[in-house]
Image (cartoon, rainbow, N blue to C red):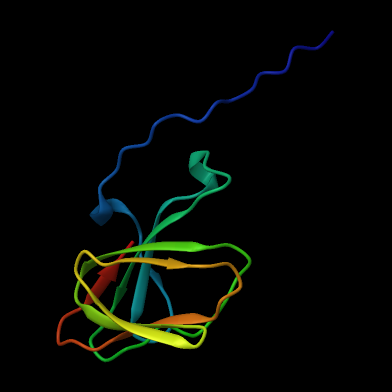
Length: 112
């Protein structure tokens, strides 16, 4: 009988500034702080920063989004609705709903 060694995920502690940035759509930068590589197969945590006046691309995907606004002001557009959001706003976007974030302030919009 061959014994298989199973690697269990371990706790990860890191600093945001130590996570590499990935250029997104014009005016947006993303940091993937928790991914499947960290042992999280069902969840990803990303910190996204959108420059003043910039917009994330309108898109959809088969999973939901839970979003927490860290700083800035924006309009979130989803389905047939839109709402103004700001620091400490919490947003739920259902699976397959087209959505985007438009920064309407003079400071960066930052969200998780």
